[in-house]
Structures are given as C-alpha cells and as structure tokens.
Length: 66
Image (tube, rainbow, N blue to C red; front, side):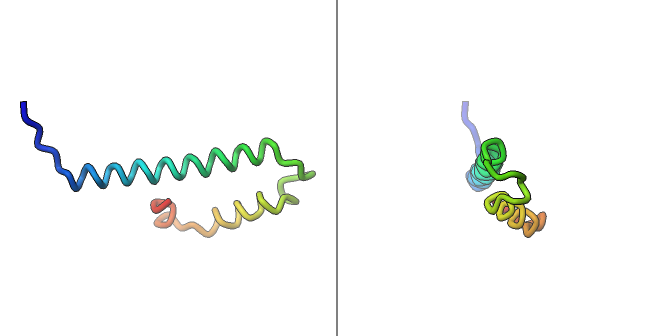
C-alpha cells in the first residue's frame, strides 16, 4: 500500500500543533501562578497584571501565532 501525503500540509499541521502546545503551556503557567500567588489579590500581583496586559494586546491574528 502506498500513501501520497502532502508534505507541505503535513509541515503546516506540525507547526499548528506546536502553536497549540505553546499556547497551552502558557495557559498552564498562568493557572499555576494564579493558584499559588501570594499577593492579597490578583489585581495587586505584578506578574498577573503583566500577563493580563499582554493577553489584552493580542489580536485574534496574533493569538494564532502563539
């Protein structure tokens, strides 16, 4: 049996999977930070505020590039 795979499409799909992995890794880090943050509130946490500021800057197009 012979397979005729589109190598370019396969590479694009691998890149897409890599982007999803990076996005999920960032989300996991953010969730861990929120769960263990010692700040009195998340609004007072510089790390959390920075994460939120960065997230708000992303347009839909930028999010696809993660």
